[in-house]
Image (cartoon, rainbow, N blue to C red; front, side, top):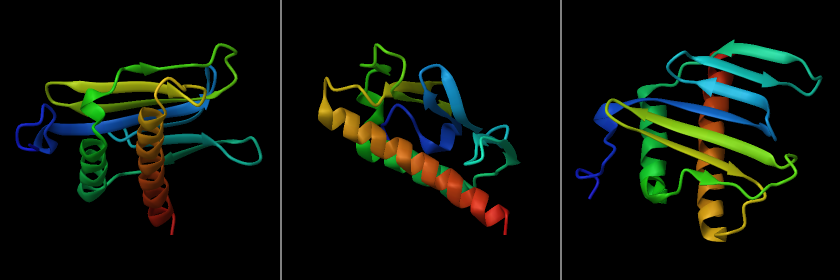
Length: 136
C-alpha cells in the first residue's frame, strides 16, 4: 500500500507549519528554508535556523501515512470568533502537495480532529527536538 501511495517519501521535499490564534501566527517553520520563528514566553520574536535530518523528515512522512493524511479534507475549521488556536500544515512533494488547515474549535469529526492534532504535535515535536540538538 505504501509503495502505491500518492505521496512517496522519495519525492518528499519538505514541510511547512504555522500556528497561532485567528490570523495571528505565533510560530512558523519551513524545512526547505530552515527558518523557525516563534514568540517566546517574554513575547519576543525568536528566529532560528533549524535543519531537519532525513530521518526527521521520514518520521513525519510515515506518521502522516499512518494517520491517513492523504484522505483528509483541506479545511477543518469550526471557529467563527477568530480566537481559537489555528494550525496550517503543508507537506511538499515533487509533483504534489498536501495542505491542511485546522482550528481547535473544529468538532465535525472528533476522530479526524484527534488525528490531525496528533500529526501537528508530532511535527512540532520533531522541530523542537532538532532545534534543541542544534542549540547545544
